[in-house]
Image 1 (cartoon, rainbow, N blue to C red):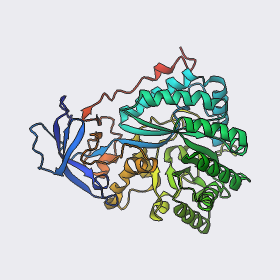
Image 2: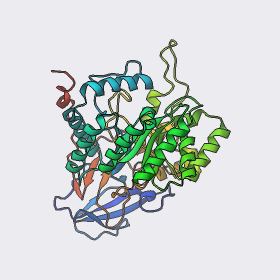
Image 3: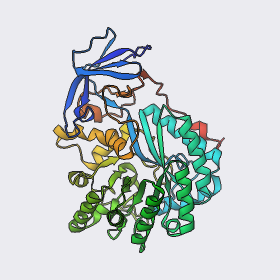
Image 4: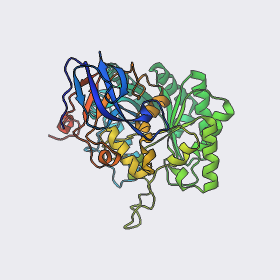
Length: 437
């Protein structure tokens, strides 16, 4: 059933199936049949099915309606470079070196800006309202990319709310002068202090230096930790120790945390308990982690033995705030993806096994909506509430399996009460950047 949204923006969506978890009861796995009244770009009322009184009504016939998506962990500066810089072997190290070469050769402001804008148009068309991106900060890139990001944040205001974290490697963090330069530039742009480390002998020092700098400048933290199959990786535990020991009170997010899933149960429990005590939120990147982790092309034909993802279910059960997100798109770290929040949710259910019991499955709809919004402190809340923007996504599915069995390419995206054009940008727009005719 195709739906038509009235151009005047005053109407009621009736008989819609909405997860109770995004209506205010975060723990509920139920679907509720509701009427949603829209006026002046906002949700004017939410009531039981049959309660709406506006003359213009759109009967959803039980179709599922979700809030617009929140993507907590992306890399807008890396996106869509695959055509000029592939990953030679599909490994994490292969990706790191490929991106390093491409960044040094090509990441002028005009290149980064066009690819960022292309990525944001994809996300917007798919139904995303808020994004946090990590930005490579190896000097002098920190000056180039922050300027571009500031321009994009202004350009996209009112459509996609943007945040950014400055991404540094351990060598930059250990260099006091470079760390301060990146952190100062990050603060000037209203950014978040980021970094990446896994197996490193100085992880305790790295994390203490980073937390100390964030505390001094009043910055929040969002790190890549333990993006590795090595059970000896300890960045997440060192981060938790640094937060607890310093009394740091800012927001702290750790992404990936892959090694947690290959550590023994005693170690994993200890780390999870520390993460909960420190108040660290965890974001898993199921599609990218599954692509990169446990890939070994050096020893003949081999199928991966594990999924590459962290212990999301155990973390959530321990009271840790969790989210899932896109990560990379069409670059050496992930050859695929399109910043589609629903794809992340759909594949996350399959990879992370939060689909059973199905009576509780819809509670997980918050991991791509309200929970990342709360973790990041976005103005957009990712919930459906009276007075909130009428930012909705309508799907032609009435149950869990109807929703999750198709890619939902024919979804209707509603922003501020009006249907938007969901036509995706053509890859040919970037051909000249990729050296293609």
